[in-house]
Length: 289
Image (cartoon, rainbow, N blue to C red; front, side, top):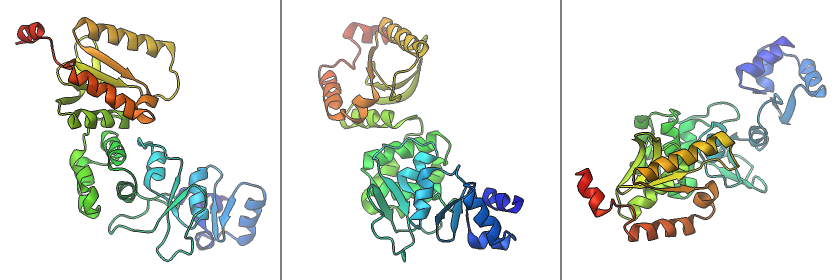
């Protein structure tokens, strides 16, 4: 039995009958582990530990590996949730539909392999993502990948020639300072509207703020989907008060306002910029000079 666990651990929780046999694990031992519920049978010849995520197990059961946004989300990167499972299958696979809520990917990229038997490699997953989702949505994840240290910027930029011609522009927009997809969306908004954009700026007595549009419009998106503790809320109030005292205009946005109600939020930001609220008042501008 020890050999069985060793094989599964070496294979990151998912192994084949052939791998067990090569390590001397008998069919009887494997069948016993399945009967006891210690090992799960995913499909013919494929087995997994119960600790392997449900998404990865489902991908293997479909004859593939988790890829695109599903694989990147599993790695902790910022991915806009679409509610779909993305699975990469071999080009010769008989699996053509995948079932409800599943998007299948057949393309492979030269030099970009799988990570494990259930999870696509980071580079392959990123390339699938760039070709699969909206360009801005993809950029959110690319920023997150670099900022988190998952992939160096130079390595990510090297993938650009492998992306489709219509999506290569995304690689030129990467900002390693953006810590979440919400910041990415706000940064892009500011640039579309023609104002100066700064990210992760340190302000005296406040600390680091997410985005500044123009001279003084500080935009702080809240990446938390649910209410946070009172300590964090109190700190947010303190920061807002200090920003106001220094003449900044602070706009705090919820996750929902940036993700689900973005059209309304962008219109509100555009209205503020049109009124010049992102600029220092004339007297303050002279004082700062």
